[in-house]
Every structure is written in C-alpha cells, then in structure tokens.
Image (cartoon, rainbow, N blue to C red; front, side, top):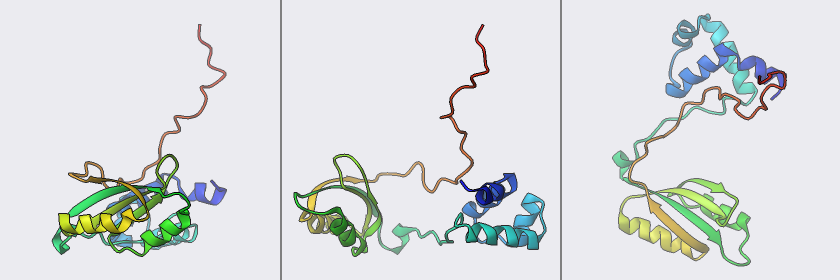
Length: 167
C-alpha cells in the first residue's frame, strides 16, 4: 500500500468508506456530520479516494426478482481440452445472464454467478455454456452474506512479537 493510500485510509477515511458502502447517496453534509468534517473537506477526501482508485464507482442495487429474474445460480466451468480460458471469459462477457465471472485456480477454470427468469431459462443457459466445458451448477436458495461492507481487517498473519518472552 502506498503512503498516499495509507493516509487516505485513516479512521476518518474508513468511516467515510463504510458510510458510502451502506448508502452512496448520502450528501457531503450528512457524511461530514457523521465523521466530524465540513462538507468541502468531505468532498476533497472523497475526490482523493476516487483519484487514488480506492473508490471505483457508485452503483444502484437492483432487486432481480422484481424485474423478472428470481433465480440465481452458481456455475462452475472446467475448460474442455484445448479450450483457452481467454476464449471462455470473452464468451461469458457476452452473455447478459452472467452477473459475475471469476477466473480461478484448481479444477475449475471459471466460476460464474448467473440470473434466470425460470428453471427453463436456466436450463437453456446451461445448454449454451455446456458446449464450452464441463459444468457444475448450484441454484442459490438464499444469500446470508451479500455485499459485505469493507472495514479494516485485523492483520492476523503477522508473526508474534519476538520480544514477547514466555516464562
């Protein structure tokens, strides 16, 4: 992490990020009241976080069920012999039902989160994808954790202090 990013991610910076993750439509005035800064100071801090690439966008969250896509599924794909992962990712980018796609290590090449309007629609999507590799599909029943608000994570991977002496 660069020094500039470390300075932006002080306690106030993290408070701003957490508030924006929960509600990106908060005004600078409201954010300022929450973190103890003036509106112009908040605007400047947020602009600097955007410039540094810490904040990469603002998005509306859509209830897919309300717009006719109540089914969510996870599709794991292993590539066929001779199939290149770049070809698979390019193909996945062209399918509007693919909401997220991750290139992964292990026996799978890609893991995709997809939406469908019905079981028949999901079956059709599986049929289209299956010509590109072996699939394993799981329908999502519920999502106990979604869009977790990022917070500073304790660094549990540091070595214990060498100065600590056990009697």
